[in-house]
Amino acid sequence: MFHTRDIVTAIEIGTSKINVLVGEAGPDGRVNVVGRGSAPSAGSVVKGEIEDMDLAFEQLGNAIADAESASDGLLNSTKVVVVAVTGCRMEAFQGIGSVVVRNDEHKVTNKERIEAHENARVLHLATGREIINSSESYFTIDERRIRNPLNHTASKLEAYVHVVHADAARLENFRSIVRDSGFEEAAIEVAFSPLADDFGILSDEEREHGVLLVDLGAGTTEFVVEYNSGVQASGVLQVGFDHVCNDLSLGLDLHIDVCRKLIEEKTLQRAMQERREYMEFPSSTGRGRKIPLPSFEVIIDARLREIFEIIRSMAAAQGALGSLDAGGVLTGGGALFERTAPIFREVFDMSCRIGQPFEAGGALTGLDTPRCSTIWGALKIAGYYNELNAGQSGRGMVGSLIDVVDGVLNKTRMGWQNFKGALRG
Image: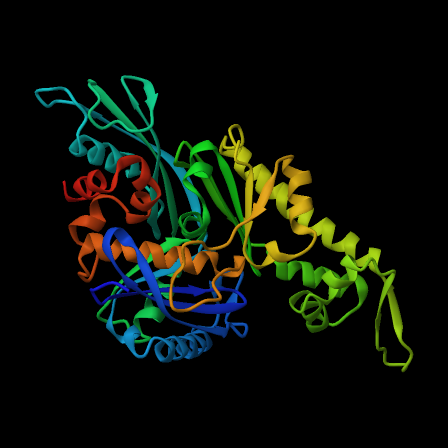
């Protein structure tokens, strides 16, 4: 454990479940898990967005109570909260910001980098839109593409920045429900869910060589593409694995709860692994109803294939499928299903692995599952917010200069000291 007692918390208000993870932050953004809690969303969240504020508040309270108990009350000392969000009419654009290098040595410093980054974020967004994350994709110095511009001699620097923005009112729903749940004194920040996944489960090598990360959740599917340690594309599709259950219900005339149970309890997966010919269900006539196993497989494969084909089109539209030597990483609850990875490989014609949290330190276990990728990544981001903001409430100077999510995704290429210097100007 660390000698300090800086407590940070991550919250994920998902379609199927609300998760809370509490950690103790240490140097360089490291974090040890000290408590966790969860509760079913109970229909309060649909396709990643809060539909019933009162019910979501109640269920979040239950998850917080569990986490508070598990952390021996440390949750109440939280300094920074990071809320992982999706839906909210998320969109992204590639901003380009330029700056003339005017210092005496004509070398790029943190000052020029910050200015170019901020200029890239400047866009006249529609009323009611809010930028939530910005991540550097790459730079050019005098029209030559480069990964790290610091200390290079140049007359002009350009920053290419991947900027994610969302519906401000819908984002505020997430902030307000967290704030009203006992975090009035904490700094509350939001992070786009696939960027939290990125920081939680991708390796430096994958980010360097090019990787497509896809998070298949209950109500949404998100993706992010990294290459040369820079975010090249991202997006969210408001279709998730719950739609697979709905397809089975409609196609096979089964109750939706029966279909969800087949998936959640892995009954269907075991049947596939055992190569059964059919599955048997009770019927109102009292006679057993036999459904051929291929009937399930055809319906599931069709929906998964459609999801991945749409994701492929979204990534291709952003010009992000050209350099993916590290292949794909599948995460989220849907990644655990038997057919998900094979269909991904067929659609994208690339290798893939199942991604889950690594380096999850602390006394608690149970985070080694794709279901925990987002919440773990959000907690790590909270650790960096704590380090950089020194636990101060609100974004302040640091938050207004460069988004922390950009920093944690680019820390390895800049070096921790350079990164902190850039933020502090």
